[in-house]
Image 1 (cartoon, rainbow, N blue to C red):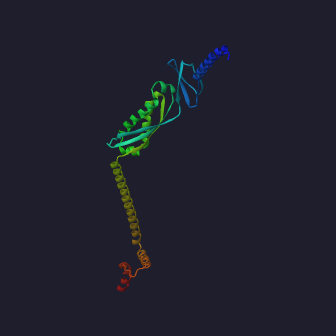
Image 2: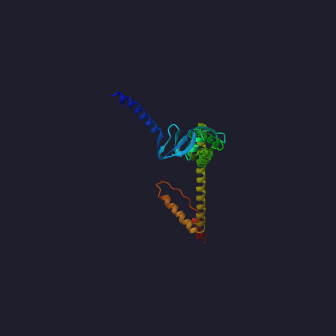
Image 3: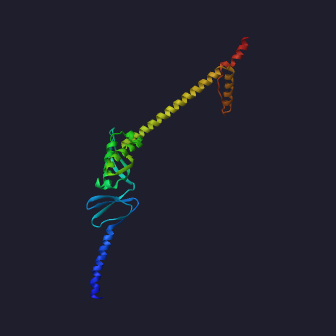
Length: 256
């Protein structure tokens, strides 16, 4: 190779490499759900995207922010309820970035900050409710958690849309106590239902006896029907009483 060509080749290669480096740092392509927060010499320029973004190499710095909803597990928290029961509760929170500029500038790590706010709020709110409310009024507690956490993260440009309490782990002795309470409640309901059935049956019997008492012939017909029912059974010996009212007509004839 000619020495003159060699001397021109290396500077050309250097220029090409520098050009590719500048081009690689000047061009960014952001997806539909991404935004790029641009800083120029440390000063905030604003959020741009999606699509093709042109930057000034070395001068501009771009920080990507996703606008998709993020599901975040809230680690299990040891909580003492209002009625002094220790439980372990975990939850899940769904949030998304609404203002990329605030999410990058106003807080160092918005995901970590949101997680910490969710944990402290979970302990604070559930510590003010009783165990029965925690187990039965889950929807109301979830709405209150979502409202409070969202108010805390709003200055960061983060919107918390849903907070759900997932699991409530009870101590073994508390689980046994709840099981006994549920069993006692079922027995109470069974007794009430049985008593209501007895009362309704007594009312029907009283009503039927009142009607039969108004018609003596009806009493005799009912008695004969009972005899037919007894005779249908396969018994060797059958004992049945004879009411005096049934024999009263014979007594009246003998007296006459």
